[in-house]
Image (cartoon, rainbow, N blue to C red; front, top):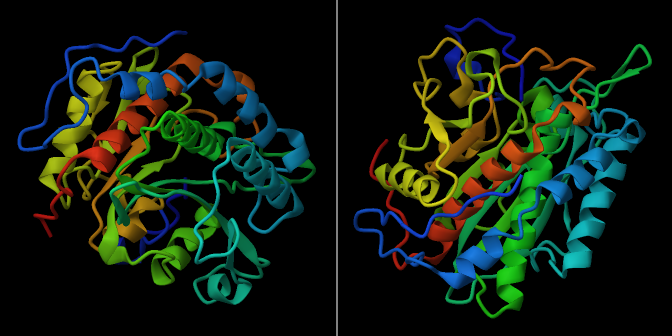
Length: 350
């Protein structure tokens, strides 16, 4: 997640930033035309594909010393990207046809003009599952895969920030693909968007929203995952997740997310940072914001500011993998409902 480095009054400038139990008592959002009915076998089968062991396996690669802290455009970040692409290929998940590859180049000049110094060219990575009934409507599940690199010979692994979100998106993609192979592909298309340059200024997501592969008018939602593998001092030992921005643009999104939570792991949903006027300004500090400012409903899933934030001690052995699994399953359950409900969620707030 982007550090808050400028005065809080300058809000206008903040364009950067075990086994789980599934309940069969499904809470149906009001007016949702919910497809996740009681005992929905397709949903449950896909949901259970999200594995703590697989999250751990992938995170130990993404956040390894070999990746050098994944600074924007660095060889280590590119190596992490290659690993992710090979993962998607192994699952049979391709890229948007119009893009021609998994890569969307984010030019150095674009970042430099926005305060990115002399960052080299970098890439967003996009994987894509086409919808069966409403393929032109796009559900985005996003996370940034960059971190802050190596400083004075010390690797800043970024296991939580945002290795946890990166592997979460990968597991969610696996779950949707398993449903597709079983004949239950999502009705709307799903874009798995791994953005670059977040730590330097939300550059990758800004580049995507300035140059969208799919029209933003057809983009239903962005579910953004940035740090979901740890706990903060305020919530030590709790089964919780912060949810930010879920009712800023669409009242339905918060209702859907809460219902998805209730029917799955029933985490404590903490809305402490939901107010854009909160001193931490978290609504503006991760990649969802570039979608929100373009009137796309967003929900940002986050674990809080812990003692290893932006330190070399943010390592994969400190991740709570069962909790990471539960939070990832919540995002999947929310995405599943939005992708498969009869009606697109409505933008009813400004």
